[in-house]
Amino acid sequence: MKKDDWFQIREAKEEDTKDILDLIIELAAYEKMENLVTATEEILKDSLFHRGVAKALIAEYDGKPVGYAIYFFNFSTFTGKAGIYLEDIYMKPAFRGKGYGKALLGEVAREAVKRGCPRLEWACLNWNKPSINFYESLEAKHLDEWRTYRITGENIRKLAGEE
Image: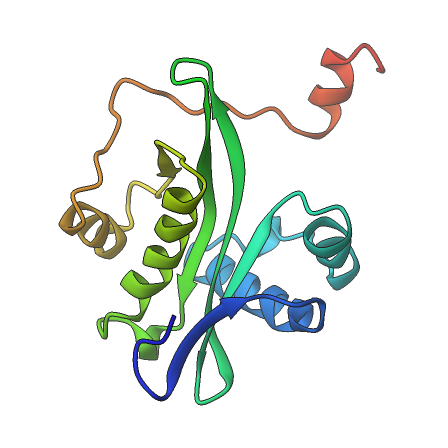
């Protein structure tokens, strides 16, 4: 999908791994969470391109990466169908407000439509007002009644009985 002659969105390829990691680190810096990034090029290559646990799109301007989206399929027992969970969407600050982020999210939405997914979901940090305003302008709904939980590291092993 092309937005204009300089901007394009395409599926990521294995050779994009370093650019994807660089953009992930930029997103983490924006979210003040750089210390939480443990991904490496090798881990991303394995996850995205060898095991295929998620899919990635690259947004380019004049052939240079300026944004990305990573998503994967989840499942709703209520609908009996797969949905898409958008793990990350990021556009470099200089390219925001030009419709490129909407175009990138639109590509993920096209994949949802193509696959018959009734839901496209993601999370957004409470303090990220620019993103919240953007999502609400698309008529995305904030789900107040749901609370996200996470268990990590040693606690996963403990729960698995592998203390």
